[in-house]
Length: 351
Length: 255
Ligand SMILES: Cc1ncc(C[n+]2csc(CCOP(=O)(O)OP(=O)(O)O)c2C)c(N)n1
Ligand code: SF4
Image (tube, rainbow over all chains, first blue to last red):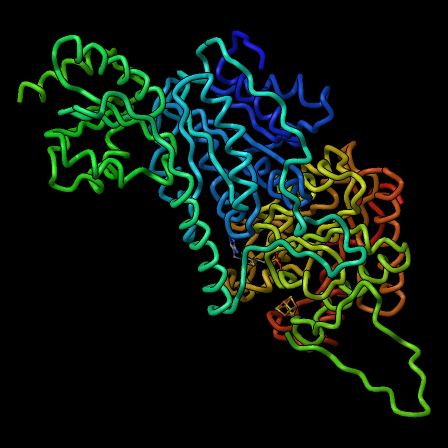
């Protein structure tokens, strides 16, 4: 462990290298430029391959190829670039290829702007690309957590043979914080990949594909995917709770907004409001059961996001009519102050 | 998957065999389609160079989507047009692999133009086999970027009108202008002599990769008898009399 001051984007890059990422492919876009620059500087010097592709579409397909060859590989981008990667992500899911995708979200839709936003929640957690697939989605709320979750993304992606996404926003990408960088992994601990394309010597040829023209065959392939998704849902749920034991008003928020909400819980408590926070760390799988359980004991579950209310749908699914489910959101890359959120909390607390 | 079984009657000897790099699976191509000949030539090249065990092939989206079944080597199926990007990923991850893609004109020259041009321009050390049959075979005979002026397809029913639909895209000529590629050639398989020349070109394209020379592309003119609504024989005539006029044979860069 070593403690250093780092920007989110750089910590993500460094953690990826320490996780054993050997190939990184990208196309420049703000606000994740520092991640690209860090990889360009560091990865080749440490024995890996860095390549700036002609587009995000090409970059994700390079990830597809490198993953098929059996190495740990990653690409990163921001919202409009992720839209272009969706085809490749769907192919990776179908072909059972691991790989990590980083989305440092910005304002949308369209070209939007380069300010922090959380408008890609639907895209990340509800498919985005075509077909019945799921993406493991990890949402850090600090530079430290971003570094740790990148390493986890590689591990989960390998373990379940499915792509994983780190979903952060421009605020986390740009902010500087002290980080305890995780130690580099021992490459021997990476699970073997007997399916990888390494040359068919003394074995039958390996084939990586995402299709089966026979509906029964494709049904079986899909059932295999669903079994994996079920297993991930049972084993890999992660979230953080703050002051939930005696809370009467629960905030659900993730990423940068989760960070803001944490300070709001503190100020609300100082003013005598029994507020608590659930901060989902895995956005897929989503901690429905825990939120549902807590909703039995509170009067209000307030969802706060840097969007028009995307995770809000999942929160409402979890809560049903057990509690009131208001929403607070900001749009277009505007980041609310803790005071803005606090006044919202007061409004519901005073009922 | 249908397998072909050949029993050799007593007293006979086998003088013509499958290349080792080909599996026993039966082709899914239509009878008389040039894809079959070209697929076999690629396998023969792998045999000749003894590289089957370190080769990874990339199947496109198109009539060659089942290529992985026909070969006896590791294979990956790529999204429509993305084969050259997938090849780049494979090769950068493991430069010891011999990597080839096999792509139609829609795959390589329409939806995958950017991936192709940039892999070529980077001098990516891969081998690309490009089947130019001037039509979209798999989806039912739509116009391809390579469709000839006046050629009727289901999406150019009155014939390709160059004022509205542009001209046949000369992919190989374009790529030959770049500094990155080491070998760009256009061949054909309409008769035995040209089959031999195509075979030689494919072997050369793999040899270049083994020698680390960079991007090689062998374009092969082909007919799609099914969608041209022609006999295989008429398909050969089409290649000679029509396709070759727009796409003259020969080496465009290197050799
Ligand atoms: C993204 C996407 N768009 C369209 C298709 C449908 N499609 C399948 S094959 C094909 C064209 C194939 O033509 P070509 O590359 O010339 O190969 P051929 O079949 O002639 O060998 C198309 C458009 C697809 N599979 N994916
Ligand atoms: S449709 Fe055309 S290109 Fe495709 S296999 Fe049949 S003849 Fe060949």
